Amino acid sequence: MCGICGELRFDKQPADLATIQRMTACLERRGPDHGGSFSDGPLGFGHRRLAVIDLSEHSDQPLVDQELCLSLVFNGAIYNYKELRSELQGKGYHFFSEGDSEVILKAWHTWGEACVERLHGMFAFAIWDEHKHQLFLARDRFGIKPLYYTADTERFRFASNMQALLAAGDIDTRINPIGLHHQFTLHGVVPAPHTILSGIKKLPPAHTLLIEAGGRQKLQQYWTLSATRPATSRSDDDWLEAIHESLRAAVRRRNEIADVPVGVLLSGGLDSSLLVALLAEIGATDINTFSVGFEDTPQEEGNEFVYSDMVAKHYATNHHRYRVPNAEVLQRLPEAVDAMAEPMFGQDAVAFYLLAEQVSKKIKVVQSGQGADEVFGGYFWYPRMQSEATGSAVERFAKHYFDRDHSELLQMISGDFCGEDYSTQLISKLLAEPGADNFMDAVLRMDTTTLIVDDPVKRVDNMTMAWGLEARVPFLDHQLVELAAQCPPELKLREGGKYPLKAMARGLLPDAVIDRPKGYFPMPALKYVRGEFLDFMRDILDSQVCRERGLYNRAYVEMLLDAPEQHHTRLQGSKLWHLALLEFWLQRNVD
Image (cartoon, rainbow, N blue to C red; front, side):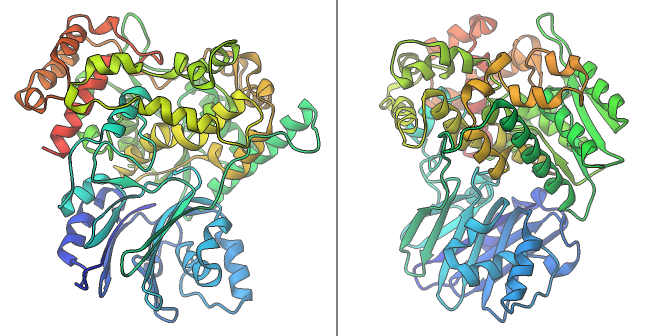
């Protein structure tokens, strides 16, 4: 797990190494173990390394294969690299390292652009082919690893976060109206290629980008998810057995492919608890688990320790739990926002940031439960969508998911930033794509391949990597997801959702963990806004820079400030926090 960046010049000038250094400096926390750079005429690479596989200097990056005239910067983990290495050795290739990075180079040399189809894991990487004068970039199937870029007639630049690109300079930092609409409609999600800034884009998940030395680009999608029933029907028991076997294999891969110990972020929910149970099932011992909790409010408890303690005791894990007072949350909140490559509305972003700080002191790699709700239908809004009998697909979805309808967005945003109903247009298009048997198939596929990428997955990557901690997400193993996408939605949504996981957990976990109501990473102070937290948000929204930016209509802001606890989204997020967070992120990154 690492941070990558680079520049390719189109104007016959050499790569600007000072710019590479500035970008690399912004990625240091993603890779505290080693830093390096490489240049070849118009091409420059920068890299920060978190050493997890092959801890020796032979896997330091940028990785240069002088024999093949190839160089690489890579962020991620390839879980089938040993099998690929053996196959490539059979083709006559010789290796100078023991890691997964070099396998990518040889795979590119052998299979070209199709090499990504053979990679099983999470990745964002760039390869410079000196002979062909081509830059090849790729991102994994679910966008677990980030890849941002900016381009003009003179150069192309890329990096693992937007801050590195901003440090490079020459960025159009105007607010992107499409990104803005998605940000406030889709719960902070801005699907690729857009971001909140006009001058920065994201490489979409499951895509590659080939760039010629003269600037010509070829964007290509290499994988799609089918949500249709298989030709041969399966019984419910067959589905449950196949899913159990596939998830167990995913957990095993993410535990064994590392040269350092692997722990678990244990929230106390079904998903993370099941990871602990499956680790025990495959024979793992001496498991490290980590939980975080916060102060209660009258409306909500700030921790789920009762459940995480139950699981830790059941499996005798080396359990570590941390309780964070609200005073520290408010004090550390600016740090967490600085770690956000993009503005993130999810209240648990700060929780993950503070938890990752403590976990990183003891371990380098953890498994985390993100993706289970999207893949197996665990959120409360899915049954509500399914029960809707009238309306178009996007209307059925929007009624239970959109944070704000377009009409409210027009009341919130000043006229200079208003545009079309971009979010309805996007969701309509995604739900109508072929390869889904019914409405719920289309919804779950869209969540898994698009919406999850820029909410929980991005959040976990940013907040863990801010402390040099690698988070692995077995529920987004592409073979498991392909299997689950073919499973009938009715089976997944049974008993309120995630039925295959609940059935799997019987006998492995205490019933109280399985049958508990769906929980979230609780941070009540950012949901029920009052006291110092309300003062903090008021100061941001009343600041001179916010007023001069003119993004928000003041009447809407005053309405939220007058009664912040009365204005929540359909997904129970604080609307006031949404406005304050975006403005705060802009102030710390753009102004």
